[in-house]
Length: 400
Ligand SMILES: Nc1ccn([C@@H]2O[C@H](COP(=O)(O)OP(=O)(O)OP(=O)(O)O)[C@@H](O)[C@H]2O)c(=O)n1
Image (cartoon, rainbow, N blue to C red; front, side, top):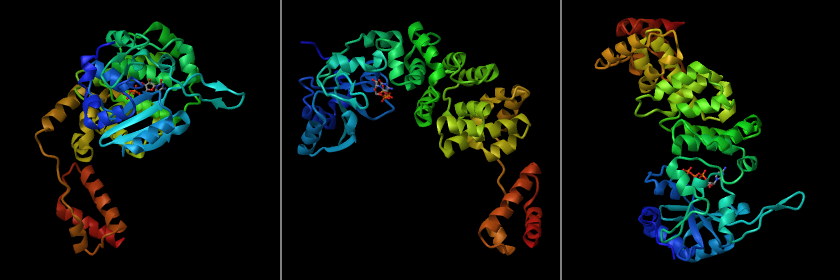
């Protein structure tokens, strides 16, 4: 009988009472239900999880999972019943429970999913060996494909035939790079895997923008990705150009907290708003933030340090590190100015809605329009126009 792995056996996703309830329910002690994927992988290397959910693989049929959960008073949601996935919620413990599948056959038109008990087959359907690590309820590790060794060595290795794994789901090309950045040895990827993703690079057009965007965003929040972006560029999955690539590297150099907005600003500069929106289906808020970083860079590049500090205080840190996006800008001098202004408080716009009411402007769109004009004029004056002058100007605007 194998021994529990001390790293796994102490993990809170195994030991917490809510988790134990689920494992017990699903015969985890007998190994019929095992945790798999991210949670096992990250626990083995002592990395804190950003995703709270736990993936469980089980021999039990979906109906059985639902039945046992309900009998125990644990909420069960059929989140992907066609694929045999049921989500269980036990207190804060959220588990996606997926029944093992045998070969997926086709009867010519429909894929036929057959459930089974073959753990090796389950492992062989997964993308990378480091994602095919399993733990049972006692914390015993199951590693059918040598994933632990690859994980320890920083090798992102496809399970079995890389071309086949990619053909099954082309998103795995993006995942390859995300895992290389997150778990790989920097500056090196497995030749076999890289050759396969390079071969598939021209075939990614059909992927959904949401799925690609979700992977890209996860990649772009990792600390060191410059070398990965270079690899992606070399096979044509992204097209930043040499200068922006160098800038992406400079941005993360010595930067304790590269942000998604900063990384997106680099891509926004290269692809434009429409391009980026289409490619990755970003939210308005994400595009706005990235756009503000770019705007701030442009303000700094033309010497408008106080305007940048006034309008986009949250973007200054990123913008200073991304001045390389505007090769004409004198980054040294701008940095110096920003640094010198640090202790000096950002000016406050001296006119308020109350002032507008006093001159007879009632709250609403009209007031908004006037205030925006005043603020613009005030910014253009280098924050020197005084309150009285601005209010006089408002009276004029109101009369028009
Ligand atoms: N295209 C995909 C997506 C996922 N998986 C498998 O499904 C598991 C769960 O996927 P996901 O939640 O996307 O990633 P994790 O590996 O769990 O990593 P994290 O939770 O950190 O994202 C992966 O470990 C992998 O075994 C796969 O084989 N192919």
